[in-house]
Image (tube, rainbow, N blue to C red; front, side, top):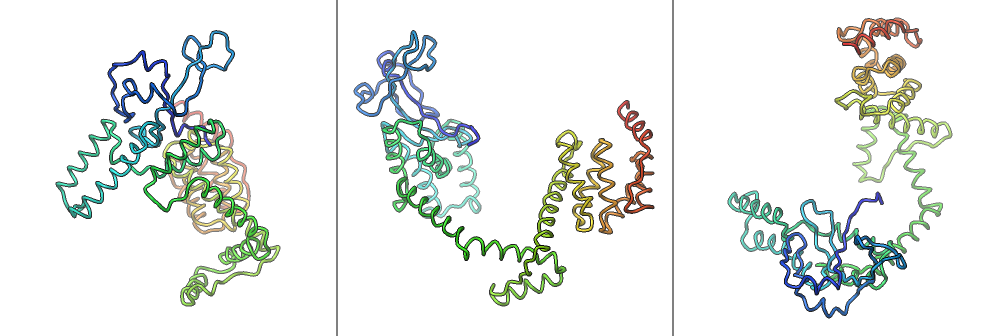
Length: 395
């Protein structure tokens, strides 16, 4: 979906088979047999495609002036998720080749654990030898004892089901060979999985449209989400205890009213902006280097407007952002937010800022104004702040 390459299909030109006979072949990384001396390719009866290339061997459309028609034979298909080497998924000349490589990992694990009773945690010589073996095979591009191909296989099966760019005959051949590689005899084939997915989707639509289905479940979830807005920590602990003692049968839920829906919406948005500011505050560098200051100020303004509901985590994040940015507008938004938050920790953070020697005097004066006149918006000494900023930049 993001445009990144997940799989690669390797082809050979039939005309090159005669030209390259006797050429030295190194199967490292590709892990397939030598194509130059393979009589099966010379007398190939499987799938092949006619492609067109210009004088510089670039693929062009049919009818392009000077284009040369070349018969192409598929050799192998690879998954590119493995961090060290391409992972062989389909070998068009040897169906057992990928399966043997998948079995090699399971065979090594079963023999060492179940037959020899060796463990990497309890046997140091085995741990060291296994580490050396994995390092050597990985560095040399040997597709043996590699991580499971489950994720790559799943991606490929999804591509085959949704991507229409491949030739239908080639798609059928790849799908058939993928089923042979599976080590699970109970695994569904592609058609069965598509049918199951369609049935599950239809069931989901029916559940979503039922008045006792998704709509009812959403209402119950909203009523449970309203509990922290109406009850303190002690009462919430009692509700959880009652839930445990009744084995989950008792779940305390609030009565859903139009007013409650508005409070729930505000609580969700407040939680979003608080989490965003906490993530911004974890930045080691200057805030303006890594983040969009407009987004940061938008969250700070929301915290300011709903200061009576903001918690201590929002206070901590706002105070950290003030110390990690040099932008005057963002710093002013931080101070306004702290002055409007009713949590006692907000006033403590303002006091700490007013006592810091590494904060310019103009900002400390502004903080003192907020402390002396809570809830108001005192006018800052703009000239002094600008002067301090310019002097800091010159230094």
